[in-house]
Length: 371
Ligand code: NAD
Image (cartoon, rainbow, N blue to C red; front, side, top):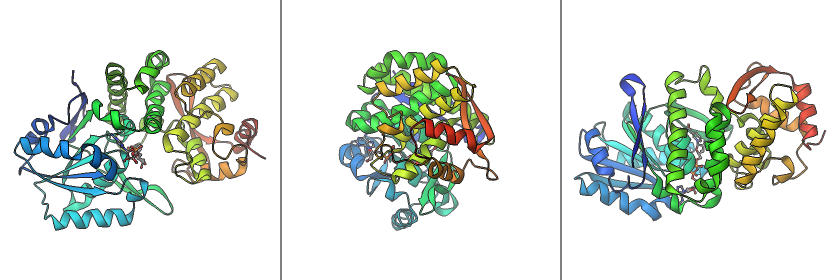
């Protein structure tokens, strides 16, 4: 069964379709969006190898001309160099504004191809066919596109909404287990920040989701997309409620910065550990019951995600002051004060501005960071 989740953004509204078999039927969904029957698929080397030909064949069957641009898999493609290379290849294909870019991959391809679409000839339409769990539940929905610079991640970008998102659940069969767990951290985050019943459902069904059970995946992806769509519709440009999606990200960002933003600790793993820390910090501040922090930790652990500093690659060598310094550089820091997304309970997150570094430092030391 295909579920359709509308993202209600007025003249930029679009649908997210979630279900099995969507790649093979991509043509029928895409043709109505085309002015010219021409698309360029942008994919990465892993996704292209596994699924590229199948998507190209599905579009060609629907009478659509297809070119494919493959970029190297990995975050390094989301750079100025990667953007220049992709833009040049799009220009060489003489793509024009009546044509359509298909971003076919994980969050890296979605962010890179989406940003290229935002600026190519002052803006061209694109659609997202997300192939990682993280991309299906998070990055393909909401229109944020960006590249990284040596000064930080996602610092150069644009809001550019896709015309359609096709989240094919079958494609997750080839996703490595570690990437699946990373996406799951974002799924469970939705429960933590705004839906206690969904969180409880994941406590019982998380194993089936991670094992790729299509029914369980369908509910997990659709509910996550619904929540993201609702938040984005209310606050497209992150003036308020959209910031709650950053639950776990201030702690997580600091952990990623200390471990080098790479394979040692992946973003989803950092978000998982960051969520566990955000709940424990909330409990320590008296905002949230201890039992909720314990449930969050239990649910993340059950998915094989790290929840404590001593489970992270650098073990006990995290320094409280260094972590706090990274948190100060986070995009969410305003005027030197620290901003965190904290929680009152499972299902109720809040933005806490002007957090005092002293109790934060005590908390980090209680978590095993060095003073
Ligand atoms: P990714 O795109 O690097 O994909 C992870 C790995 O899985 C890659 O090696 C990729 O080749 C591989 N892969 C993807 N789908 C596959 C499949 N079906 N089969 C086999 N291999 C597959 O990383 P990601 O975790 O999808 O996304 C992370 C990126 O998303 C980061 O750059 C992050 O900044 C960005 N992001 C953006 C937003 C947003 O709102 N725009 C939100 C969250 C994250």
